[in-house]
Image (cartoon, rainbow, N blue to C red):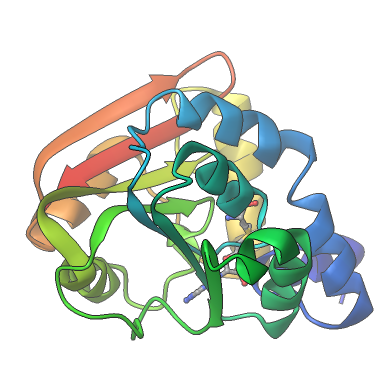
Amino acid sequence: MGFKEKMVKQVRKPEGRFGRRMAKMMNYGPHAKMAKWAFHHIPVELDSIVLDIGCGGGRNLQRFAKYAPNGKIYGIDYSEISVKVSKKVNKKNISSGLVDIRNGSVASLPYADNYFDLITGFECHFFWPDIVEDMKEVKRVLKPGCSLYLIAETYLSDNEEHVNQVKQWAKLGNFPVYNPKELEDLLQKAGYINIEILLENDANWLLIKGKK
Ligand SMILES: C[S@@+](CC[C@H](N)C(=O)[O-])C[C@H]1O[C@@H](n2cnc3c(N)ncnc32)[C@H](O)[C@@H]1O
């Protein structure tokens, strides 16, 4: 397996020592810049109950904990290594009971129906095993009237160079990539309403929001 292929595999599901480094790196670099942009567009209340799916290195859980100190912040990731790194990064807030991090897949979320005020997936929906069914599973745990936010730089933008790069990664990792309209259609198929798309074209960042 070549180095790039190894990288994609680790980004998809961090494992072992290399995976731990990758999960830590997710908290910095380009992901962090995109997350900072996205947080300007995600309405978090002081008492929001939030779920971040594919929480990776756990940095976004830390951000949510800062914005919703009277709420509860949940993170889930199917990589044991991501969970381990996320738990270390959020140690203080886990001890106080503000943050809860679990090992599990988006395909079967270990939470009650109609529980969350807000659910996010940063740079991970294209790894989901059955995207429409998984979006439905996310909808199950969202409160009526509340929204799922998907944020990504791995999508088919209008920028040819960016698209070529994204397609190359997708081919190496054997995962699907979508343009904004395709994502809108998928959310609609899963039963979401009031879908809104926000693009930061200079950076090739996408935020798409669907309401239950
Ligand atoms: C590219 S990383 C993004 C991590 C983090 N959200 C960020 O933006 O830095 C993708 C993460 O999604 C997780 N992931 C992929 N498929 C998943 C699934 N089916 N269920 C839960 N987590 C998943 C991976 O283990 C990995 O930690």
